[in-house]
Image (cartoon, rainbow, N blue to C red; front, side, top):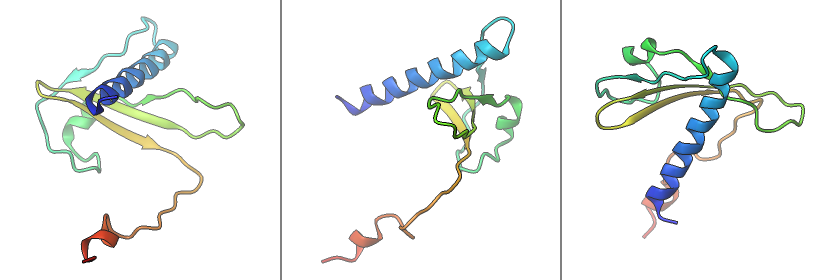
Length: 107
C-alpha cells in the first residue's frame, strides 16, 4: 500500500475513534475541530494554539484489565492537521541514545 494511503487510513481511523468517544461525552455527538493558523510543532505542546482546544479521551481498545489513558487534541489549518497526544504507560524504555547513531560512522 502506498505510504500516503496508509497515512490517510490511519488518520481516518483516528478520527473515527475520537468521534466515537466524543459521542459518549457530548449531548450532540459531534467533535468540533478548531481552525488555527500554521504554527511550529516542537513536540512539547507549548504552542498557545493548543490552549484553544480541549483534550478528548480516546476509548480503550483492549479489555485486559490494564487502563492506559490516551488523550488527544486536534487542530487544523489551511495546510495541515495537527495532533497532540498525551499517552499513559506503566513503563517506557529506550535502548537508543541517538537516532541512527549506529549508521552514521560506519564506513
